[in-house]
Length: 551
Ligand code: ADP
Ligand code: MG
Image 1 (cartoon, rainbow, N blue to C red):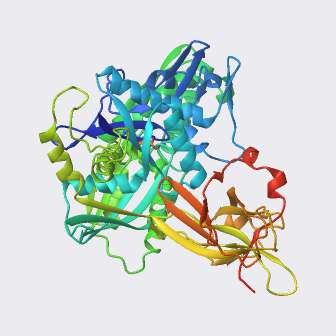
Image 2: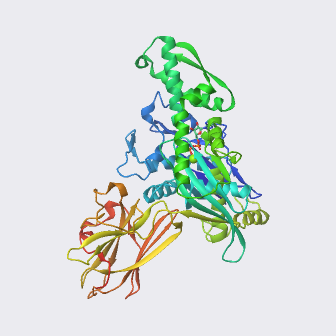
Image 3: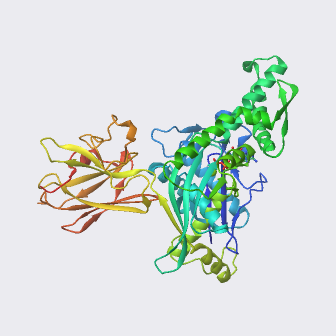
């Protein structure tokens, strides 16, 4: 059974595994003659749901039955749901349909798939991460772990051409998002004393609302404008079919302009044929502000690592096929730009990481066995696995935390109780990040304590007053974007004194947050973390927090 890496993209998704030589390979999408699957779902009728390019072709004419860009909704609070033929779908369920399509792709080509690593944007918070994992499980996959997209891209590059002590800037312009990441590659030794290549993330930045779609929209507006001029019609008079015709052709025209100096687009404007010629120069002019926007993010990300010297810039994401991108980046980093599998690097890196996890930790559905034994095709694969082992044990990936995390507790010093959020782990710390601290019950003979865990965007040690008396995040502090992640109930035995130490531990890795509390008098461990509001029992939650120090 192979392990797979999945790039669940905003506009396109991709799935890869390691071949028998230990090299990452993408599973082809033969239906669309492509390496990717469009992340678009068309609910044709109660019995038929279409995922991929065929779904995309219905956007303008049947738009209310098409779901796209669902990655922007996944794991968000108060997010929308979608209703088709009497059934309601959450963003997690829609994402699961896309993942199931990728699973089908593997199975239709005779492969077996269970263990996967799914990639997520570096800026995804905990809820987006758990929702992504949940989507994988719903699609019938065993999600070994998540990995940040730029880290996966760097891993894939590193596997191909490792050079010691180099700093790489990953410029990832996809369909709907833009990410910048500064990564350091170095040689180090692992616990067993073997040399490993280390990938260390130094800074991340970007915009989750900037991507190839913006270039499509500009081209769409331009072509619509020309059609109106030629036909004498106003934009309102242009029929939905014509719009769909333009919509379905802009992306192709954009791709043509990556190769050629001009592209001809034939449109049926309300029944009469119009030909629009767009030159690369025109296209570059109409989108130059978007290119500049990406370069501003590059600048601001570089400022997070003062004095850094970039050796190589790695272009990933389908939109970096546009020559204007390469030119702009080349202008800032002359002679340092490399384009590396723009639309496959992320999935390939995830495939390498997935194999690494199985080899190193013996995790996965194989029940702790390493990848040796039989492959899904039935051949013995000792040879294959030694190659895979060689490749995958060469790396050590060190990523950064996307947010700050900590519990809400009571500070009893002073005349009035203060409800504070103590940041155990802060944005940009190396993952996995672990931190523990000891607290105490608020009163003698307390039946239980309630431990609330928060995520936020602040780098302060403590946030006051970010939580109210009931431990809820305060709306008065939107800048820090404090989110309640859930809570842990710690039941205390009768006659517990208020001096009983309760040790609280937070552990954060790319897959999520693990919260644990230990009553150090009884050594009882509590780790059942209630994530959703409906799980939280208001009766139990109403009172009894933890206080900071023993006084
Ligand atoms: P995401 O991960 O955000 O889904 P991808 O990295 O797969 O995105 O990139 C998809 C974007 O790349 C789309 O906007 C697509 O139109 C664009 N793209 C793909 N190939 C080309 C090309 N040859 N020229 C210009 N844009 C391209
Ligand atoms: Mg992407």
